[in-house]
Length: 578
Image (cartoon, rainbow, N blue to C red; front, side, top):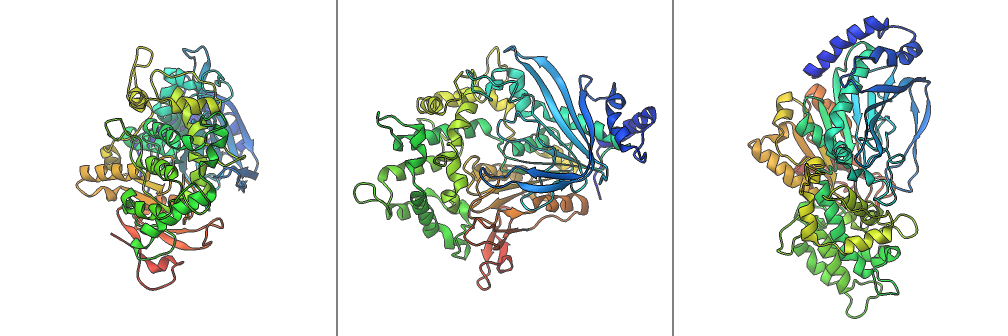
């Protein structure tokens, strides 16, 4: 049965009054008229009085191309249904930096509505209002196509309006305390409430069921809702959650300090353009081979997938790496001692001078040689720069530390700044406050609480897929968080929250993995039919060594273990077991 919140019922009652006063009802055939009348219909009836509609347009059914999950990949053509497209704005203000800020949101209301509501999570530093299509997975139709009303938002700043080349470019919003708070969590509930009110006004009733879906920063946003506003959603899909973003950004600087000394220019200093050459593709292939030699067979199948990735530690991989160390100078077919030191330092995660962990370590996994790992840590030569520097450096300087540091968005300048950081000092800045910033970056841009009592009481469900070779947010952090949640729940957290690791997968997608799966449908079945997901069927894409291979994704702590007989490329040959 679908779940009904008091907020949804309240919105439904409000909608009936709005529909009568505006002379519009869900059964009215004049869809264009209803769409165009929304500004008048909603005037004086927004949950936040400062909200207004910028435009509302009835869009005919037609094609659109969705952006790719990975840079350089082709977009996906999709046929959208007829819908009312609405752009809205709230919280318009002038920031402490003199810039004009606002929270902008984008809603699409399909004329053939399934009575559902879908909040589309953001990504990176946000700053774009989003397409409000509602991506649900690599091979599944977007939420709008499925009949959901969809909202997306820019989280309180605009990359075009609020960019400043002297203060981190598009990360300049971090110099405004409210903009930082809006980016972290403060914009989320106001947008959800405004969108639900719009849904109720347009259709004559509020949504019968509500879902949030996001990955990365969107995953963090899902965690904010789960922990701070559990009344908003019946189901939340928070993939690869950046719920410890400030610490993860410091880990990116830690990575730069490990890898950049391998990329020195003619002047003897680390060079950003040379960073991608710190490890060649063949070098990373050697690291992958060492991981597979050490850990591949531990799940019962030597198949190129490290099912038991959580047990694949540095100590276990070290002998295999040592056997691939060059006897003398660096040469093809072997790794230099400095390379092994650097990658071991990276996988170990950032630590203080006293050896205390600041973030967490990473499991050694076979996705290390995939483009989706390289693009963050090192970059793709002549294609995409290291995102750890270009995005991570700017974000750490402007958004995740107090006080923020003004830097130009120049990769070489960001690399020099990351190289010069005192890790202990910056770690303290993650939780620091000041007169200008009474809340720390950690308070504003993290959602790491293991207290999900509100979500449990609500009867809502939370699913958390995460790639084992995610180079941005370590799956070890997600697993440690889940163990805390489970401890608080007396070992019964799986009744309402489940983590689904994806061995080999990089950040949200890609890698030598069965990274194509439909977690959203599994979430809907859990919420609406009570079918708890004991396994999710996943398949490998054409960019893997085994196109078409299938595997079960198992809820942690279970892993996919080979039965001992059967086709290694078939999910039927594997059980989810401890």
